Structures are given as structure tokens and as C-alpha cells.
Length: 308
Ligand code: 7PJ
Image (cartoon, rainbow, N blue to C red; front, side):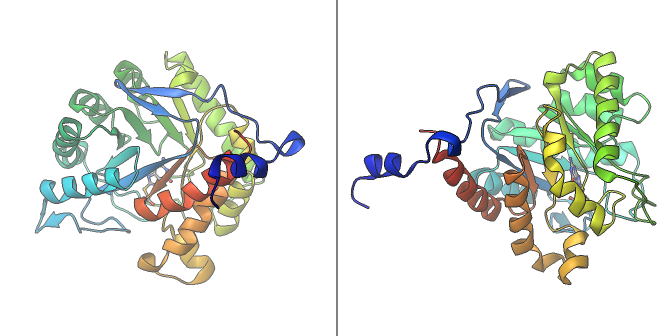
């Protein structure tokens, strides 16, 4: 192993095996903090809901969100390699009850402010509520993540006015009903068509393509088979030319496939994360930043072998 430089270049594949560089990979401007998408990056999830399926209530002291505990989680995730933190105040797990926008704001905004003041990380806010989009941008958020793809009344306008990039996610139905026998003739093309229509709606509202990310919405109104078809067909979404974000971390599809409960789904989540990156995903949304960053780093090392 003694002479790394020359040995590395001798091992690097050449000719037809060389991996093409991505000179046009975008750098997103997220409220002045830049997000380099030339290689896959990690989005760490911080749920401020008391009933999240993955880390339900662990950030709570009694009925109150413990902001100090949430900040510690944020610091840890950044140290572990998260480029984005996704802060959510509405539980969107299957069957979840709706929360009021006011309640969502109370949970999310204080944390966004504290993270923006303390950490140099891009802050994403997972919301469909127009008022929260507006306030989150004021509080220092750099990215809007909407599982309803800006379909709520006033959301397109609110998001456009923030000037922030937006992640548009596909969901069939709503969290209360979405897992009741979802049906698709061709899930990959239906999700792709839906996302393209939302891109057009955004552009009509003055949100340019350069500000958009796409997400197939694993687990949102999809059977296990649909989720697998979407993962296999991810290159079709990547081919639309916008960065693709995926959230597979600890999702119930894993439980259904291999019978693991939430706390035992990390190994499968890591496998899925690498499979998604291999198929072109730009951003991996995860509850387990350190482990996911390590897994993705292995893919990056292999991928960059051909780029020297
Ligand atoms: C996703 C999300 C996802 C995006 C949730 C969970 C459920 N946002 N918010 N994509 N999932 N963009 O944390 O598993 O897959 S909430």
C-alpha cells in the first residue's frame, strides 16, 4: 500500500469504464449557504413531533419539545456529516392525525432559529403549511421540503416568495388514508408525470427549475412492490435533470419485507441508501447520519476511482 498516488491511478479504470464527471452538477443556493450536489449528500431528520414513528417523543420533556436536546441532536448530526438538517413538526406517518399550522410553527420555528444561529448547515423545513414556509425562511431556513409538492392552497405563492429551493415529493392521498390499497398502472411513469406537472406549476409561479428537487415519496401511498419498482426505476426520475432526494430510512416497507421493527431497520436502510445513490440519488434523507455517511462514503470512493 506504500505509494498511494501512483498505485491509485494505476488502479483507476480508463476508457469505457471511466465514470463521467458531472460538470453540470448544481450548487444550490440555500439562503446564502451553498449545497454542492456534485457528490451525494446526507440530510439528517429531526422530528419535533411527539409521535414520530422513528424517534417518537425522544426530544420531548413531558409535553414540551426540549430545544436543547434537539440542538444537541443537530450538532451531532452535523459532526457526523449531515449537509442538511430536515426539521419537521407534522407527523406524516400512515394514519397520523393532522396538526394545526400554529402548533407546527410553535414546534419548528424556535429550533430553526437556534440552529441557524449556531451551525453552518443548510436547514430544511418539512412542511406543507404556507405560513410556516414564510416564517421558516425568516428564521433562517434554506430549503423547503413539502411532501404535498406545494399543492396546499397558497403554498406555491408562499414558497415562491421565499426565494428558497424546494423539494417536491409525490404522495398519493393524504397521511390519514394513503396506505389504503394504493393502485397504479405504472408507478414509475405516474410518479414521474406528477412531479413534472408540479415542476410546470412551480415555473408558472416563478420558481425556476434551478430551485427544484424531486422525490418519489417512498412509502407515501405505495405498496412494497411500488416502492421497489420506484427504487429500481429511480434513473427515470434522475433523467428529468433535477436533483433527486430519497427517504427510505427505517420505513415500514423494510418492516414488511424482512419483519424488523423500527429500531432494527438500520442495516436494511443502509443497503437501500447505497442502492439509491447507485441509481443517481443526490440526497439521502436519514435518521442515522453517521452510519449512512459511512455507507455513502464507500460508494463515493468507488465512484471517484475513475475520475482522477
Ligand atoms: C419523507 C419526507 C421522504 C421527503 C418524511 C419519515 C416520514 N420528506 N418526510 N421524503 N418522509 N422529501 O421520516 O420516514 O421520504 S416523514
